[in-house]
Amino acid sequence: MVLGIAGLDPGRSKCGLAVTDQSGQAIVAALVLPPADSLALLQRWQRQGLRLVVLGNGTGSSGWCRQLAELGLASQQLDEWGTTLAARQRYWQLEPPRGWRRCLPSGLRLPPRDIDDVVAQLLLERHLGRPLARRGVRSGRAR
Image 1 (cartoon, one colour):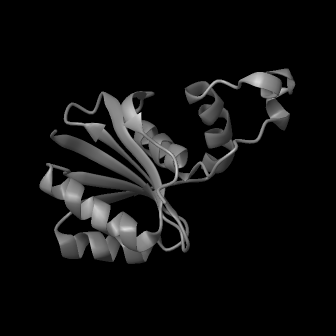
Image 2 (image 1 turned 45 degrees about the horizontal axis):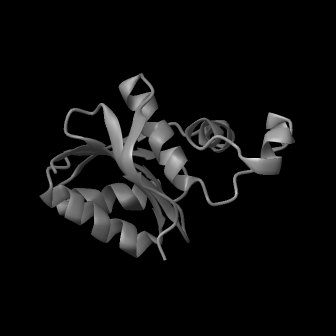
C-alpha cells in the first residue's frame, strides 16, 4: 500500500501516529508507540511513499523536526493547542460508547485508552482542512 501524509503527536514517553492513504482521503493506520518505535515506523512508512509528516508544536517537536530532516522526510509543525480535549470528543465519534458509557453525559466520558493517535489524526485533519474517516485501521497502543 502506498501512503500519503502522517500525523505525529510527539511526546517524551509515547507518541501518537496516524497515516493517510496515498490520496489523503482516509486514515489507514493509527497507533500509540514509544518514541524510538515511532521513528522506526516513520522510516518504514517512508519506504511506502510517505511524503510529509505533520506534527504538533509541543513537547520535543524541534528535536523531531531535526530527526525527520535527517531521514529526508519533510515536516510541518502545526499549533496543537486544544487537541487533547478535541481528541476526547473525536474518540467517541470514531468509537461510539457502549454499555454503561452511553449513559454518561459526553463531558464526563473519558476514553479507556491513550488517545495520542487521535490527536495525530486531528493534526492531519487541521492540515487538510477536513475530517478523515478511518478505513481498515489498526489502532490503539502497540505492545
